[in-house]
Length: 292
Image (cartoon, rainbow, N blue to C red; front, side, top):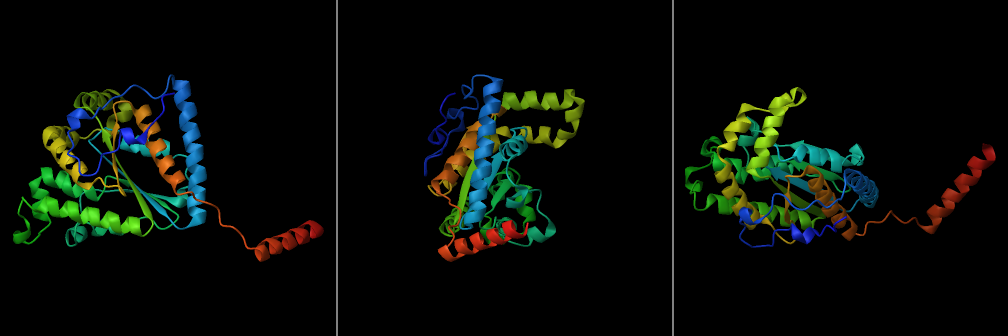
Protein backbone atom coordinates (compact mmCIF):
# COMPACT_ATOMS: atom_id res chain seq x y z
CA UNK A 1 0.00 0.00 0.00
CA UNK A 2 1.17 3.54 -0.79
CA UNK A 3 1.33 5.71 2.33
CA UNK A 4 -1.34 8.42 2.38
CA UNK A 5 0.03 11.81 3.39
CA UNK A 6 -2.84 14.28 4.05
CA UNK A 7 -0.50 17.18 3.30
CA UNK A 8 -0.43 16.09 -0.34
CA UNK A 9 -4.08 17.09 -0.62
CA UNK A 10 -4.30 20.04 1.75
CA UNK A 11 -4.80 23.53 0.30
CA UNK A 12 -2.22 25.88 1.85
CA UNK A 13 -3.65 28.93 3.55
CA UNK A 14 -3.77 32.00 1.34
CA UNK A 15 -2.46 30.20 -1.74
CA UNK A 16 -4.13 30.80 -5.08
CA UNK A 17 -5.69 27.58 -6.38
CA UNK A 18 -5.43 26.41 -9.98
CA UNK A 19 -7.51 23.23 -10.23
CA UNK A 20 -5.85 22.27 -13.51
CA UNK A 21 -2.71 21.63 -11.45
CA UNK A 22 -4.48 19.41 -8.92
CA UNK A 23 -4.96 15.83 -10.16
CA UNK A 24 -8.38 14.23 -10.45
CA UNK A 25 -6.71 10.84 -10.56
CA UNK A 26 -3.61 9.48 -8.84
CA UNK A 27 -1.89 6.13 -8.65
CA UNK A 28 -4.13 3.90 -6.51
CA UNK A 29 -3.10 3.70 -2.86
CA UNK A 30 -3.95 -0.03 -2.90
CA UNK A 31 -2.61 -2.91 -5.02
CA UNK A 32 -5.76 -4.99 -5.40
CA UNK A 33 -9.46 -4.98 -4.66
CA UNK A 34 -8.79 -7.32 -1.75
CA UNK A 35 -6.25 -4.93 -0.25
CA UNK A 36 -8.65 -2.00 -0.72
CA UNK A 37 -11.37 -3.83 1.20
CA UNK A 38 -8.92 -4.75 3.97
CA UNK A 39 -7.65 -1.18 4.30
CA UNK A 40 -11.12 0.36 4.27
CA UNK A 41 -12.30 -2.13 6.90
CA UNK A 42 -9.34 -1.21 9.11
CA UNK A 43 -10.11 2.49 8.72
CA UNK A 44 -13.78 1.91 9.53
CA UNK A 45 -12.95 -0.02 12.71
CA UNK A 46 -10.51 2.67 13.82
CA UNK A 47 -13.07 5.38 13.10
CA UNK A 48 -15.64 3.53 15.19
CA UNK A 49 -13.23 3.41 18.12
CA UNK A 50 -12.33 7.07 17.75
CA UNK A 51 -16.00 8.02 17.59
CA UNK A 52 -16.64 6.18 20.84
CA UNK A 53 -13.82 8.15 22.45
CA UNK A 54 -15.16 11.41 20.98
CA UNK A 55 -18.59 10.70 22.42
CA UNK A 56 -17.26 9.66 25.84
CA UNK A 57 -14.83 12.58 26.07
CA UNK A 58 -17.67 15.03 25.24
CA UNK A 59 -15.31 17.98 24.71
CA UNK A 60 -14.92 18.17 20.95
CA UNK A 61 -17.22 17.99 17.96
CA UNK A 62 -16.21 17.10 14.40
CA UNK A 63 -17.73 18.72 11.31
CA UNK A 64 -17.08 17.12 7.91
CA UNK A 65 -17.98 19.14 4.82
CA UNK A 66 -18.22 17.54 1.37
CA UNK A 67 -18.42 19.63 -1.80
CA UNK A 68 -18.14 18.49 -5.39
CA UNK A 69 -19.61 18.56 -8.85
CA UNK A 70 -22.44 16.13 -9.58
CA UNK A 71 -21.48 12.43 -9.70
CA UNK A 72 -18.17 12.99 -7.87
CA UNK A 73 -19.07 10.39 -5.24
CA UNK A 74 -19.98 12.44 -2.16
CA UNK A 75 -22.83 10.12 -1.15
CA UNK A 76 -20.81 6.94 -1.62
CA UNK A 77 -17.80 8.37 0.23
CA UNK A 78 -19.99 9.24 3.21
CA UNK A 79 -21.77 5.88 3.06
CA UNK A 80 -18.60 3.75 2.93
CA UNK A 81 -16.26 5.74 5.15
CA UNK A 82 -18.80 6.30 7.91
CA UNK A 83 -20.43 2.85 7.71
CA UNK A 84 -19.02 1.76 11.09
CA UNK A 85 -19.98 4.90 12.97
CA UNK A 86 -22.76 4.69 15.54
CA UNK A 87 -25.77 6.57 14.05
CA UNK A 88 -26.55 8.01 17.49
CA UNK A 89 -23.28 9.90 17.41
CA UNK A 90 -23.48 11.13 13.83
CA UNK A 91 -25.82 13.39 11.85
CA UNK A 92 -25.89 13.93 8.09
CA UNK A 93 -27.47 16.98 6.50
CA UNK A 94 -27.93 17.65 2.80
CA UNK A 95 -28.32 21.26 1.72
CA UNK A 96 -30.96 21.86 -0.91
CA UNK A 97 -32.47 24.95 -2.52
CA UNK A 98 -33.20 27.42 0.32
CA UNK A 99 -36.75 27.59 1.67
CA UNK A 100 -38.71 30.83 2.08
CA UNK A 101 -37.80 30.85 5.77
CA UNK A 102 -34.10 30.44 5.02
CA UNK A 103 -34.22 33.26 2.47
CA UNK A 104 -35.44 35.57 5.23
CA UNK A 105 -32.24 34.97 7.23
CA UNK A 106 -28.53 35.43 6.63
CA UNK A 107 -26.83 32.77 4.52
CA UNK A 108 -25.22 31.03 7.52
CA UNK A 109 -28.39 30.82 9.64
CA UNK A 110 -29.55 27.41 8.42
CA UNK A 111 -26.12 25.81 8.76
CA UNK A 112 -25.68 27.19 12.28
CA UNK A 113 -28.80 25.29 13.38
CA UNK A 114 -27.32 22.01 12.15
CA UNK A 115 -23.88 22.15 13.70
CA UNK A 116 -22.85 19.04 15.68
CA UNK A 117 -23.00 18.94 19.47
CA UNK A 118 -19.95 18.15 21.58
CA UNK A 119 -19.15 14.47 21.29
CA UNK A 120 -20.85 14.19 17.89
CA UNK A 121 -19.83 14.06 14.24
CA UNK A 122 -21.75 16.27 11.84
CA UNK A 123 -21.62 15.70 8.09
CA UNK A 124 -22.67 18.35 5.59
CA UNK A 125 -23.37 16.87 2.14
CA UNK A 126 -22.96 20.21 0.39
CA UNK A 127 -23.10 23.09 2.83
CA UNK A 128 -23.13 26.83 3.36
CA UNK A 129 -20.38 26.88 0.74
CA UNK A 130 -23.12 26.60 -1.85
CA UNK A 131 -23.63 30.31 -1.14
CA UNK A 132 -20.30 31.12 -2.83
CA UNK A 133 -20.53 28.40 -5.48
CA UNK A 134 -23.92 27.77 -7.08
CA UNK A 135 -25.16 31.20 -5.97
CA UNK A 136 -22.14 32.77 -7.64
CA UNK A 137 -22.73 30.86 -10.86
CA UNK A 138 -26.48 31.55 -10.91
CA UNK A 139 -27.20 35.23 -10.22
CA UNK A 140 -30.96 34.62 -10.04
CA UNK A 141 -30.51 32.70 -6.77
CA UNK A 142 -28.69 35.67 -5.24
CA UNK A 143 -31.49 37.97 -6.42
CA UNK A 144 -34.03 35.74 -4.63
CA UNK A 145 -32.24 36.30 -1.32
CA UNK A 146 -33.58 39.86 -1.29
CA UNK A 147 -30.45 41.47 0.07
CA UNK A 148 -30.29 45.27 0.19
CA UNK A 149 -29.13 46.53 -3.19
CA UNK A 150 -26.27 48.40 -1.54
CA UNK A 151 -24.79 45.01 -0.52
CA UNK A 152 -24.89 43.45 -3.98
CA UNK A 153 -21.66 44.95 -5.29
CA UNK A 154 -20.11 42.02 -7.15
CA UNK A 155 -16.60 43.22 -6.23
CA UNK A 156 -17.25 42.84 -2.52
CA UNK A 157 -20.10 40.40 -1.82
CA UNK A 158 -18.06 37.22 -2.36
CA UNK A 159 -15.09 38.57 -0.45
CA UNK A 160 -17.47 39.45 2.37
CA UNK A 161 -19.00 35.99 2.38
CA UNK A 162 -15.57 34.36 2.48
CA UNK A 163 -14.76 36.51 5.50
CA UNK A 164 -18.02 35.54 7.22
CA UNK A 165 -17.33 31.84 6.64
CA UNK A 166 -13.76 32.05 7.91
CA UNK A 167 -14.91 33.98 10.99
CA UNK A 168 -17.56 31.35 11.73
CA UNK A 169 -15.11 28.48 11.35
CA UNK A 170 -12.53 30.22 13.53
CA UNK A 171 -15.21 30.71 16.19
CA UNK A 172 -16.20 27.05 16.03
CA UNK A 173 -12.59 25.93 16.33
CA UNK A 174 -12.08 28.11 19.41
CA UNK A 175 -15.07 26.39 20.96
CA UNK A 176 -14.00 22.81 20.30
CA UNK A 177 -15.39 21.98 16.86
CA UNK A 178 -12.82 20.56 14.46
CA UNK A 179 -13.63 21.12 10.79
CA UNK A 180 -12.46 19.13 7.76
CA UNK A 181 -13.53 20.20 4.28
CA UNK A 182 -13.28 17.89 1.28
CA UNK A 183 -13.56 18.93 -2.34
CA UNK A 184 -13.88 15.75 -4.39
CA UNK A 185 -12.06 16.73 -7.56
CA UNK A 186 -13.68 14.98 -10.53
CA UNK A 187 -12.65 15.35 -14.17
CA UNK A 188 -15.26 16.43 -16.68
CA UNK A 189 -14.64 13.26 -18.71
CA UNK A 190 -15.18 11.00 -15.69
CA UNK A 191 -18.41 12.85 -14.91
CA UNK A 192 -19.57 12.16 -18.48
CA UNK A 193 -18.87 8.45 -18.04
CA UNK A 194 -20.76 8.32 -14.74
CA UNK A 195 -23.74 10.16 -16.23
CA UNK A 196 -23.84 7.63 -19.09
CA UNK A 197 -23.69 4.79 -16.57
CA UNK A 198 -26.63 6.25 -14.69
CA UNK A 199 -28.62 6.31 -17.91
CA UNK A 200 -27.54 2.88 -19.19
CA UNK A 201 -28.02 0.96 -15.94
CA UNK A 202 -31.67 0.78 -14.97
CA UNK A 203 -31.04 0.59 -11.24
CA UNK A 204 -29.09 3.86 -11.48
CA UNK A 205 -31.66 5.79 -13.54
CA UNK A 206 -33.08 7.45 -10.44
CA UNK A 207 -29.73 9.14 -9.81
CA UNK A 208 -29.80 11.08 -13.07
CA UNK A 209 -31.57 14.37 -13.53
CA UNK A 210 -31.79 16.62 -16.57
CA UNK A 211 -30.69 19.41 -14.24
CA UNK A 212 -27.36 17.60 -13.85
CA UNK A 213 -26.78 17.98 -17.56
CA UNK A 214 -27.75 21.65 -17.45
CA UNK A 215 -25.26 22.34 -14.66
CA UNK A 216 -22.52 20.61 -16.66
CA UNK A 217 -22.71 23.48 -19.15
CA UNK A 218 -21.40 25.78 -16.43
CA UNK A 219 -18.33 23.64 -15.70
CA UNK A 220 -15.78 26.42 -16.27
CA UNK A 221 -17.80 28.85 -14.15
CA UNK A 222 -17.94 26.32 -11.31
CA UNK A 223 -14.22 25.62 -11.51
CA UNK A 224 -13.49 29.33 -11.24
CA UNK A 225 -15.87 29.65 -8.27
CA UNK A 226 -14.25 26.65 -6.56
CA UNK A 227 -10.75 27.97 -7.14
CA UNK A 228 -11.49 31.30 -5.51
CA UNK A 229 -13.46 29.70 -2.68
CA UNK A 230 -10.83 27.09 -1.83
CA UNK A 231 -8.04 29.63 -1.87
CA UNK A 232 -9.92 32.15 0.26
CA UNK A 233 -11.30 29.79 2.93
CA UNK A 234 -8.68 27.10 3.54
CA UNK A 235 -7.14 27.89 6.91
CA UNK A 236 -4.91 26.16 9.42
CA UNK A 237 -7.88 25.38 11.67
CA UNK A 238 -10.42 24.56 8.93
CA UNK A 239 -8.46 23.24 5.95
CA UNK A 240 -9.71 22.26 2.53
CA UNK A 241 -8.50 18.98 1.04
CA UNK A 242 -8.67 18.54 -2.73
CA UNK A 243 -9.21 14.79 -3.06
CA UNK A 244 -8.83 13.07 -6.46
CA UNK A 245 -12.26 11.62 -7.27
CA UNK A 246 -11.88 9.73 -10.55
CA UNK A 247 -11.28 6.51 -8.57
CA UNK A 248 -13.86 6.18 -5.81
CA UNK A 249 -11.89 3.59 -3.85
CA UNK A 250 -8.84 5.83 -3.62
CA UNK A 251 -11.09 8.74 -2.66
CA UNK A 252 -12.57 6.80 0.26
CA UNK A 253 -9.20 5.71 1.60
CA UNK A 254 -7.80 9.25 1.44
CA UNK A 255 -10.85 10.76 3.13
CA UNK A 256 -10.92 8.14 5.89
CA UNK A 257 -7.18 8.56 6.54
CA UNK A 258 -7.51 12.32 6.93
CA UNK A 259 -10.45 11.96 9.33
CA UNK A 260 -8.61 9.35 11.38
CA UNK A 261 -5.45 11.42 11.64
CA UNK A 262 -7.44 14.43 12.81
CA UNK A 263 -9.26 12.48 15.51
CA UNK A 264 -6.05 10.85 16.72
CA UNK A 265 -4.41 14.26 17.05
CA UNK A 266 -7.06 15.14 19.65
CA UNK A 267 -5.70 12.35 21.90
CA UNK A 268 -9.20 11.47 23.04
CA UNK A 269 -9.51 9.37 26.18
CA UNK A 270 -12.33 7.66 28.02
CA UNK A 271 -13.18 9.51 31.26
CA UNK A 272 -11.12 8.37 34.24
CA UNK A 273 -13.14 7.36 37.28
CA UNK A 274 -12.36 8.69 40.72
CA UNK A 275 -11.15 6.20 43.39
CA UNK A 276 -14.55 6.50 45.13
CA UNK A 277 -16.41 5.68 41.93
CA UNK A 278 -14.14 2.70 41.23
CA UNK A 279 -14.79 1.37 44.75
CA UNK A 280 -18.51 1.86 44.25
CA UNK A 281 -18.43 -0.25 41.10
CA UNK A 282 -16.45 -2.99 42.86
CA UNK A 283 -19.06 -3.05 45.64
CA UNK A 284 -21.89 -3.26 43.12
CA UNK A 285 -20.12 -6.08 41.32
CA UNK A 286 -19.82 -8.06 44.56
CA UNK A 287 -23.55 -7.68 45.15
CA UNK A 288 -24.39 -8.84 41.65
CA UNK A 289 -22.14 -11.88 41.94
CA UNK A 290 -23.48 -12.75 45.37
CA UNK A 291 -27.19 -12.41 44.50
CA UNK A 292 -26.95 -13.95 41.05
